[in-house]
Figure 1 (cartoon, helix red, strand yellow):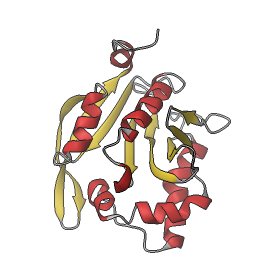
Figure 2 (cartoon, helix red, strand yellow):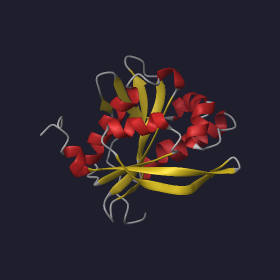
Figure 3 (cartoon, one colour):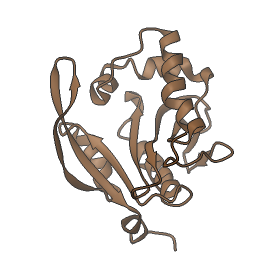
Figure 4 (cartoon, one colour):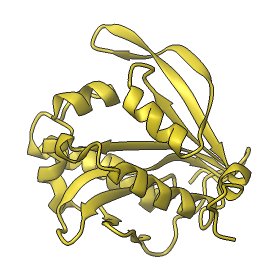
Length: 197
């Protein structure tokens, strides 16, 4: 394993908030994965083609939802709205690097029926607290398509700063897409007026 990458913790860190349980994603969630990542708005906003079928969804789930934790390169949580165990979205860290600043990139997605209810804000606050605490991150960053104003509002509410734009950084369905880079530093997270000291 690359020595620059942090070892995974011994057990998956389940996080709980007032309304949510952020839990481990398993193969039992393959049906959700297929449904979620086949939704046209999720496909467009993530710039990833949908899985072809349930078997392809299982392979993606292992690659992006299970393996990063096992290999210590990231953590992806499934979002469940209490009291149901069923997933409504996912979020987490990838490209988790210890050396060179101890940083990671965040990705997130949510089924359309659950958007604009503060769910992703609540989930993001939980994983940021975990990232800047247990993971000892110095920097968390997000890449966002500049047309995705809802996602930009989300990260700005959480205190992220716009670093700049990676021009035509992503190629999807025959076109180049800019990626706006937003970042949040540990010291900025801890200096929030509502930070628990």
